Image (tube, rainbow, N blue to C red):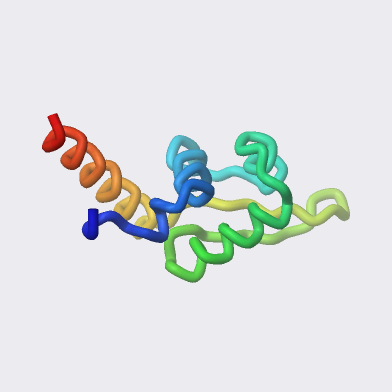
Length: 95
């Protein structure tokens, strides 16, 4: 299990990464709604994923309201693919 990316393996971040993996981008409200996480949890975990270079964050104003949009970076997609491959390998090996 030491080969698992611990940053992604944490349950909340795994859920966030999974949510972003299936879309090109998602805004803060969509992510919070889809995951059921509080605003603080989304912000905290996304900040860690951004610091690792896995998530890109875009902040803008739309109709005078702030909007934060997230997307996986190329490195984030690669890391998530690697994570999935590792988990699949571990599950296959345990049969």
